[in-house]
Length: 557
Image (cartoon, rainbow, N blue to C red; front, top):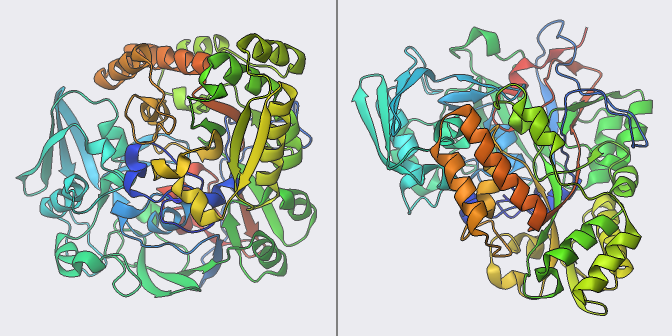
């Protein structure tokens, strides 16, 4: 995964797959976001040791309310158009999906109490009985059918259309049963139903709201632990506890959550330190040290599936030669970027995905996959010789950026220095955040641009959520890179449910991508979250985009 997808100046430089098409995507704020690749303490090769926290201390009790900073106001909270950090971290507490993506990146039943895969092209979902929408009406199979079908409707222009590309029908096959039929086996379809694509809304509400669904006046009517209360444009959005929520384990401990829109990073940090807001995700890296040493609260780091990458968007220029792409990556001081731009919290990325996306691979396979990765250690001399071999000395490349924060500036300068070191002539093209967003949605905006930065996270625990976006013709294949062997490997991974064969095909796709480098992986960085003195209970994880994290927050003892 938007502006990222919606156009806000601080969005997450983009996210994934063809979804972007309707999204708006990615842009800016990303650059201040985070990513990670592990679940253990990380200290080597970084300026600052950090620890991945699975769960913050348990709450001592309930709280009446808490405030939460968010770096941009959502353009909408319509789940079909929510493909970015701001709308998703709100919706994850209000709307629910058929399955649930948990903070440990596993998947479990949710609104679907169970499911079956009786044939390779059929998925059958048993809908949980007794679940109520926020207006008091009861969840039925018809609501599920209406909600999922929106992703198939071209008029909806859903950002989640890609996961439904193989769906031929979605039908009510019982009062509490829904059957999805596929044109061909698809190993990712069911997994996506734990994220935005599996969201369920009241069919009556969708019909009544029409084009106004999800805006500040109408809000949404779902089944989550919080319900939509109010939205003051330009200022804040408030949720209130839903007392009739069906799941006692995730019943909200706070009576209310107020999301405050604070676009400026300094303003957000000051709000943490003053206690004006009680917490927030995506803490600016240059504030890590100050927040750690201060008395305002606690900074935590958690699991992530994000990699910071330079997208090669022009394969007709000097970067069209894979040797030059390899040379550039070897000339980038990625450890230096982690130290100076990411507050010392992160790791150099050896892949376009994080290690934890191989969780479903059979025992022993994961270790072998990681061991066999093609790596590009920092070696300016070797890089310069490789570029000279390609004969690109003196040729110009254009690096697009936006003046969003210090991290963005540091990354861009490091890439430009590396380009100079291998004999290229880099030109930095700094554009507004809004214009930067269009790089992810409009091919014309990428004309003349050779490189641009993204922080790419996945919405499922599967490498295909990344590698599928690099297939020939994929919307998010921004440089129009094409490799028949890569495409075939991705197709095999999509078409098989067998864990070993699935992992094998994914590994083949990964090997080709790392050899050819259509995108240059820079580093990973854990999810960051700050909790003030009043609250605790959250599970730090990228799953906060789909998991009801706010329901677990209560009073600090």
